[in-house]
Length: 169
Image (tube, helix red, strand yellow):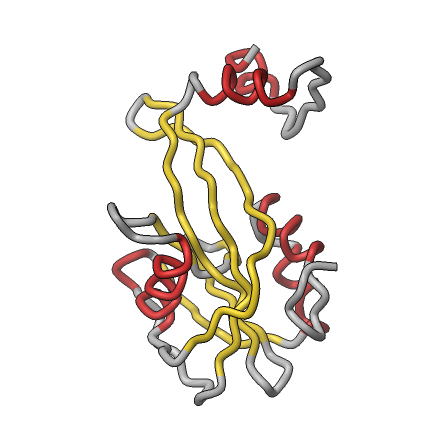
């Protein structure tokens, strides 16, 4: 089923199964699991932090290191990828999953997301060695630009957030 899905060009499926947890366990058995964490960062000015990596809009995130909690990884990754500190986690957001192939291996990446507040200057420093060409602050009226050139899981996460508070809608 996974091979058929990957070769079909269809981007999503709905699977009905009498025991969803058992199905998920079976499904994940075909993948190497990688966990990552990141944040939707809000500034008091009403702007939100986005990055552009490999030509697509994204949110700052990265792999969780051994022994690191998702919260600490998210804070570290935002600092590293955007060059900002003094971040504060306000709440946990829904996690996302996406799949890809790397060196012939099927990867399932779970990303833990957090709403964060940042109350310092708006100057950023994109982590170019990670393929990040921009780290910029946008107001919600600019999100259509992001939604037109981002990954499906990021678009769905953006749709889950109430942009006045950073909380889930």
